[in-house]
Amino acid sequence: MFSVELENWETSIATESNRIKLNLFHGTYHKKFKDMRIGQAWLVKRENDLYLEIVFSKIIKLLELNDKAIAVDINENNVVSGSEKNITNIRTG
Image 1 (cartoon, one colour):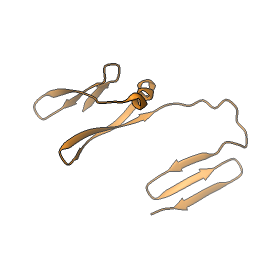
Image 2 (cartoon, rainbow, N blue to C red; image 1 turned 135 degrees about the vertical axis):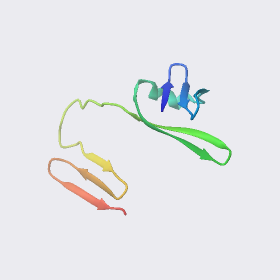
Image 3 (cartoon, rainbow, N blue to C red; image 1 turned 180 degrees about the vertical axis):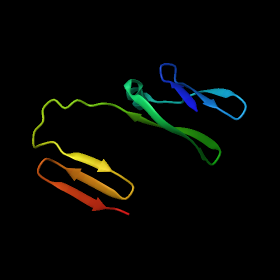
């Protein structure tokens, strides 16, 4: 269990006995995530460092539907792309 406060760049993570609050290191690039919805998160250890990897999502409105737009879905075992006229499924695993 976790909570993330992007306004102050802090996170609170549940441990076995209590919750700990941590400051999140961030750069200019990360500011674009402030308006996005927070999904899943993983605490990842690499050597002696800990990283909080967070999945963000955002609804994008298409201004106009036309034949110039395609959909792309990238999964573990395949990549699917398509439009109204054509769907392509590429197996990767």
